[in-house]
Image 1: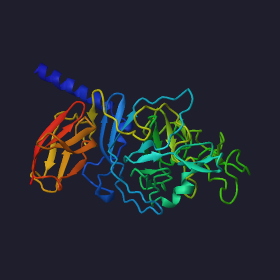
Image 2 (image 1 turned 60 degrees about the vertical axis):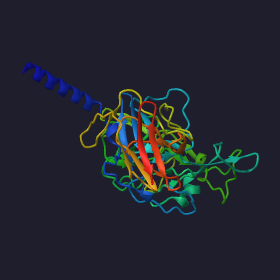
Image 3 (image 1 turned 120 degrees about the horizontal axis):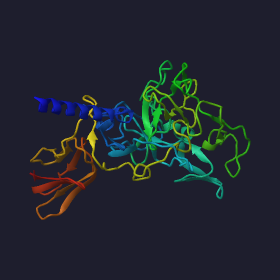
Image 4 (image 1 turned 90 degrees about the vertical axis):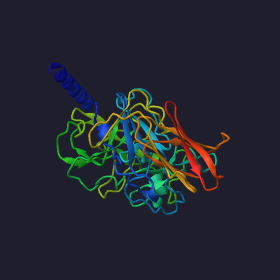
Length: 410
């Protein structure tokens, strides 16, 4: 009996310990538990949240659960990005040189959609007197001004690589008209600090009325731009991001568009970014995160190939229904139909392991089809309609696990 009681107590202590590890950085994500789909029948929202003592891993398609599109003057089409973003659970202030927010994703919304910075990717090339693409300069075009026409009703649009994203307030993700309650966490920046909607407490200690957080960037009234485009009817003030000048005390937020404050999720206080909108709910520069991050930024998320991390260490998969769920580490899959004559679908059940490579190999050992970046909980397809009839082997493999199954193409 004493042994039984000791076992129960030990189990209870372990459960409480695990529950204590679960914070807003784990529970704030919109996890798809029903297999729901979004644009073009693609899996929507976040597919899986895993965590260790140091990091949270967010597996997401980059497709929201709500309706998106159309995109005027934008030929791009959203596609499944198979992201696994890595968010530090121990964010710290960067006391050195501030890190500039790069082009591409700089954070991730709570539904797994990417956050982009305020720039549209074109900068003023003073040597040619025109705009150049593919980088940043002293004067950078404001994405809201130059790309706003292609934003859908949710204020997002797809990039050339199919990455659906927001430069500005994601109005379909939360209620941006609710000025009576503190906004929820709607994302995390890649320095690990939370991003809230537009409303917070008046005072940083968590007191005072709820108010709309105001940016401290003020539109310049200058009539010239040094080594930049002229200020005229073609390029009026506001067209360039740098037309907005940080002015301490002009608003509620600092140069990074955040502040250290008490929030409902962090009663002891946290540095937090806030989405900024004006009194008419229109996006207000710098929109989400300022030109630089407040904290330090981990490798693996930013850049053209960023956002495809592999969890390391002791990993737990979070369950939004039970709180925690230690994942069965045995790799189990669904492969169907088998036999098949046209399409082969394959799906890896939830597991604390990511980034598999799927290959279909013929009887001579030749790889005839291949898919990299295969993530658990997302369905994938091989078109086998043009393959010769016969027996093949489907391999699923990453650095730690492997699975094989015979497939008959008839």
